[in-house]
Length: 428
Image (tube, rainbow, N blue to C red; front, side, top):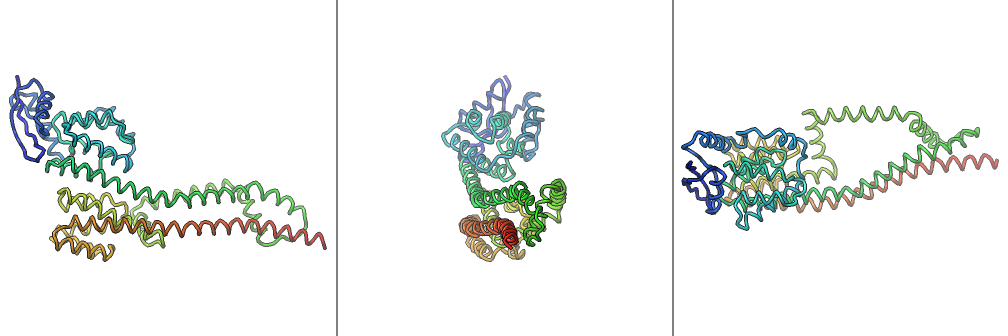
């Protein structure tokens, strides 16, 4: 019977080693889990097949997510079709896994249970692939790294830190809280824009209906009379002809503008200019800045709290932030931190981050609690974001109503002024 040497981790984080006389690797993994241990590497030193399998497992451990085996074509095509899960979906999946591990389940048993749990946005095939990788002796973080459409660098590095510290359950809970907070912020944005979007759609529909169906009937009446119409009515009639006779030209213009705009948005210069405009836009710009600063502080705090090195944490945070201008500032900060400077000094050098953030970060560096300071910064800007969203909604709603009133008022004034002029000419 082959001997399997193993390396496993206790719940306390201590690494233990041993040798098992069992028939195959799956049985060895089951025995290790019955001992209450988390398997890291399972080795078969006295067998060619076992040694080959170990080499693959060790390569998977060393490769930081690089696959030592090729996933089946059906699995890879399945993963290629799947969209990236939403924040709330990922939070639910993470919380479910944390609850199972906290109940005392071994990792493989917990992953097996995950395949039977309802988890919207993350199919059971994901848990099955994770279980298979772990059963083969790879770490959970390495298994997750093979599915980048589901698990981001932030997620993988957090799980890896949890495996190394023996506090995987706690890390998963923090991850769940992290994604829930981001999902809450996204929901606030959506809720703030629902009413303005509805008003805009209704307004555009009314204008198009009037210009396309109602105004041509009035035009028939106006054209039958030899009367000079008011300027506003003539403008409206020309616009109606454009809508009804040259709609295809307008459609081509919209498509051309969309194509040019899409190319501009995808270019490096265009991305930066658009992101600069977003940061400096009136009303909306402040909301965007509050969201980005909170996202930066929350992500960096979560990573540093779980033992991720500061340079790695800054790199992951840089990848997650969607704004190019903020990305460049974080990249410059990372270079300065490499030179031995503190976080607050290079952030202040960028002149992009607010002084309040710099001051709070300096206090954290002086007290030796940078993650705690970043958490306070995140909470400060998330609370400020809630206030600014309320202000933005309060300003946008009456603005949309005023714009709608002006458009509809112009339509009515143009038609009624023409009717009054016709009536006056008939009376004379």
